[in-house]
Image (cartoon, rainbow, N blue to C red; front, side, top):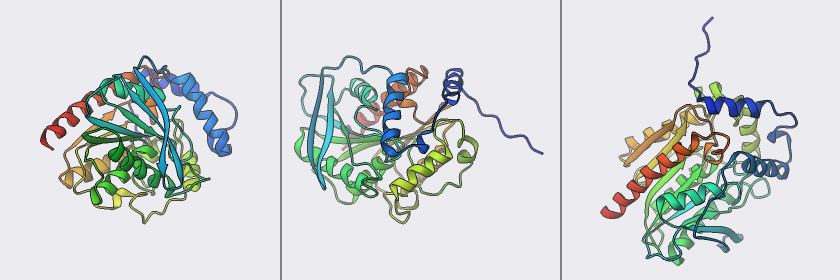
Length: 315
């Protein structure tokens, strides 16, 4: 009998997981969607850092394909000349998550990148199943390109939002918006609907994102596996903009993220790949519970800033 492989886990990650796994009560996937959404909000209040100081935060709505889309605009400068603007699509399995759950991260991104960040509150399943989310994200990106002062777009998101980042970039590759997409930054993205991955088997229990949770998200979202917006791993990646793709070492989605990074490289896309070794899915919203995640966040955004500057210089 062979022993299961051991995987490096950071001490603060091990402490956070021990705390998380000791909690009693129903799991997120045992609750109705609204209860799960509230659970994610509460987790953020407990496990993430405060927003911190930032010069400007503005909530507004922009037109979408099925009504207004709420957005939140962050900028650490009260006034600036037009430059690149980031759109951020939050994670949460296309079912949970909102502007508040990723508020601290978006403020930090605006500070480190020194650019405006527009967080998009796209429609959620099961009330609005696939393809409502990617339709909203594409519409929001096109609106920002046409209506906000900018010289280029940076697209980013985590998990489901990483999927939406890639889906939106593919849409704008084929039908460009009013401004070019100069870089994308998918963070531990979901890029396929199939689950035959070793990381899925290794980390599908006890590492925050579980097999049961992923099945619950998938059932609510009801994506079409033949649609590239659901499974970009199965479609061409040629012509995508410079990409910084991040995975987490203890994430069920790790191996599909690695596979997409390899696909990008094979397609000739300028690609930077980083893995948050010993960390878990969701860490960008866990910087209080997992203090070392602050270094992962800062490190990635610092690299992204350089990628954007280089892309803008050669555009």
